[in-house]
Amino acid sequence: MYYRYFYDFPVSKSLLVAYKIKMQIANKTVVNEFFLLGFSNFPLFQHFLFCAVLLAYTICVFGNFTIILLVRSEPSLHSPMYFFISSFTVLEIMFASVTIPKLLAILIQTRKTISFFGCFVQMYAFNALGETECYLLAIMVFDRYLAINNPLRYPAIMHSHFCYRLAALPWFLGFVTSFIPSIFTFSLDFCGPNEVDHFFCDLAPLQNLACSDPSISNITTSLAAVVATVLPFFTIVGFYIHIIHTVLKIESTEGKSKAFSTCSSHLIVASLFYGSAIIVYTRPKGSHYDKFFALMYTVIIPVLNPFIYTFRNREVKNALRKIIRQFTNFLH
Image (cartoon, rainbow, N blue to C red; front, side, top):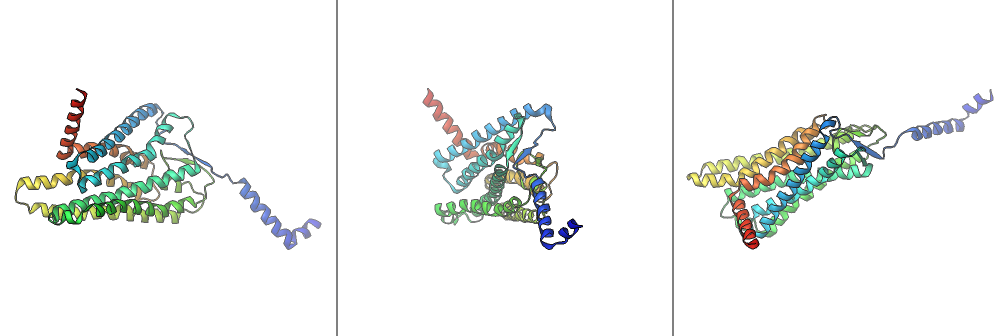
């Protein structure tokens, strides 16, 4: 009887509710690290994947760094187009370095973990650099558009100061656009499970692990994908329609071939990157196959880009032959 009166007392009721809430919070598991599952469901291929990814990363860094050296050292490549290409190669090295070293680590480590804050830092850096790449690809086709559609005014428009501003704009837009969905995802509650079905921390896999409602985070992710991926993609398509229309008006076959050759490398790179990125980031919930698409734009495309820009570009090939010849003569 005494207990019943005690329980009915208002203060005692509030204390009991507070005690229950405190116990629920105490019993809740707070996530302080995540397990990156990666490709652990293919245990027999872990070492093969490690060797393949390590080789790809080495080629990526060496190939892109070679292009940077070529553009810096060869006067014939001191033009806005190659300035943007060298900026793109710097971005490619950074973009690959955000994810590939961790992928190499989890392929050979038994404990495939990443700290809570390390996970979100990787997520933000990856998305910021990826969105920067989307914007930079649009800037590069804008440069080609001006060169082909306004060849007489092109040198006056694309002066060095304007090029620097254009090159800085994608970095600003990329890091600002990715900040909003990253903050909303970081603010979600993570109380378990903590297994990320990916080889790096990304928005959709983390949102799927949240204990709280991720709908707002999903919406901001989709909006950021539209702003940073879909809009630049249609911008590129629009510029290429105008470029093709202009090139078709050129009477000489040689002139058409030269105009198309300056755009073909960029068109291939943009198609590969956007093709895989749009598939992944326009679906906020993600899927089990996203990590396989992610291999395309985190490992394969950064490896292919140096070869696309060298083997399909006569000026870069001539500059490379010149550097090799000078180096050979120096050795002899």
